[in-house]
Image (cartoon, rainbow, N blue to C red; front, side):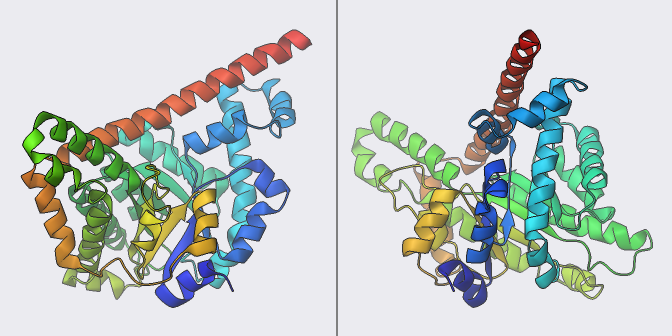
Length: 375
């Protein structure tokens, strides 16, 4: 048994891998990680861009596809191929967990982040195309994404709501999940047990942005330097802990109890962006500090390795509920507007995924041209 197994068995938290690469599927690395206790896989446009650009393992399939497809269609064919193989590797986890874990997440096109109708159509397309019970389609938790989430849940589709940076938007996402389940009942469904969902609350990026603002404030107000700079690295875990409090409150409500009587499963909080960006911080700052039941932590490879080596399996997500609120209040008092931080990070997150996708399509376009010239 590894610490990853202990994380789930002792604390009820599911460790997932925040990476998907074809060589991991071909050489058995993903299967080994599942054996070590990984219980799910998340992907996004940046992950696929790194996988495809940084490897030759896709070249043969791409060369075959490009003869009868345009570049973007070829990209999606390669991605769906990886997703299907990963779903097969995780299927035993899905079955043994009764549908709680064993998921692989595929994100809709980044350009749809502010297009409700397009997001709905894309999510339906992927669920129909892949048709696996352990597929999560990822929908960005933008203002336009939230109603798409409700529609998809009402249709019985499993959704991973991604790019959440604020408690306010997270509350809207919980409401969309419950509303979708209520719509499903109103539409004639009597059993909600087949519907699962996670809400991906991003963590380390919050500290990166808040720290940047604190350092700017410290430079502007020399008298406040010690107080301001001492608050670096405090925002992300505190906000995630408040998100967990919100999760517990909303999923203990009378509204939820009515849904639970029909078999509904809670929409679990998923901690995303959990690698440490600042080398001055502990490498497991966003793992060890957010352990608790009914949660997921999706970790990149190096964070998985670090946790296996020196992680601490102990419940921490609700260790000091009052302290988390005090931390955010203190940040507000020195001039940190967390709502503006969230808006900035959401915009950056959407733009970053779109940029990765566009750059990859350009790389593949250049590769297709080179292949054509070679013939």
